[in-house]
Image (tube, rainbow, N blue to C red):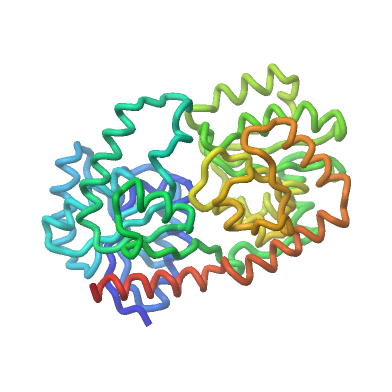
Length: 383
């Protein structure tokens, strides 16, 4: 079906949304005739073995500056002779676009998030000059891109204006997840997960899947646990995701709120689907999202969802509230109230979870995403 040779360049294969999406879709691209090879800028532990098991060759660049990366990538492109170079995430976008131009191969880029917006202001580490400098580099190299893939309509609209790219050069292909790999919610699966975590079968289990960064809003979830425990004293929040800039702050917040024993930072996990399948509530309190992959997985596994009311989240769960309880961004009280409602109203909660699964099957399967990406590649090769 595909018959396109693609060299995919990504910052690393450390566990994250873009990386997990690549691992999920790779075997389905291969089965559709896409010859896929992956190059990473950094060699970080995480998902490389998973990608290689699917049949994808992976290599990483030697350490060096941006100029070194461009030279190395250009050499790889000339050696592999792909029809397209596909870049994802900032460092790979910049180096990959320049290297593809140097090697004379068309480049496509994924727009994975709505960068450079006002929502960056005020976040830890924000530097206006640095952000605008990055945007300027992104704008300049964006002119070298033949077509853009946006993970959501929200991202496409935002980045068309922020990168000065005509909207006709941007295609929206939603990310998907493999329902067969994720499996289904089942009592025996829940029992096994709780036993592995050492959590009593009657204790409400709240699950969040996110790296420890400000954008993910885990601080809101941790602070909400104080109110949640007042109505559900045995409730436990487990967070699966790699450590980051907010790790120590999250631990401090848990201590200050008196919920240190009720909040568990599990670190990166290979059993995310099992955790979601056992969750009484899935929490996604993000401040920003391109397309929330963990919400897709929660829908597939019929986990009751409490999520930030972001445009990108609404694009996934719908705007009618049928699939999830949506709360104002950053509101600790609203998160706590939504969790309490989810735990208290079993009938409505089950209805929302069922609606989420149905919407997932209709719009966000990996098969649909793979078909979309193959079409995108074919149109890009055709110019």
